[in-house]
Image (cartoon, rainbow, N blue to C red; front, side, top):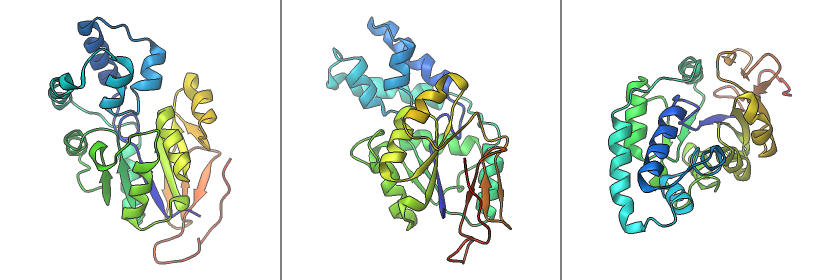
Length: 239
């Protein structure tokens, strides 16, 4: 039975894949590197910037990271963010039902603030975990474990929405159940990482407060403990 929902940000709440890809491809070209699609999948999406720089740009000294971080900040603060289809509606339904919510992102806090401001979600989450809140980023489970601790909910009773392999790995390693937002070409990868279900976005997702059930698509639903109760009002399998 589930009690809380934890969300990644990039690719889950906000549609940022194109802007993230463009930034790192432009930086790579400027520095004389070539990034392949595999590099983006394995070391950009869902990862902190320090991981990306360390793995994909090994000749760049750490002393130069601050300049790149500033360039990244200026780029991302200039963007107009749009929500993943259905995300804001689902967040609203969960919030009205009193389900504890957390945001767990590998982005810096300034980006999370800007994304949530633009999407009119500044107070949607009870807690927000950003890059500097944990010593290690995804796929390490620290971020999700900290979010569950702050919510006061056992991680095993948390449902996580992620999009990148590193994020799914992080959530599953923490002990949560993870639903991945992924296109068909990524489905095998996120399932191999441990995703319990895969959906393209939140357009079919809905939270039924009466039945205490979160449905993510026509076939998959997860039962929740209603606010103020120890046992769920209705049971619904998933799969």
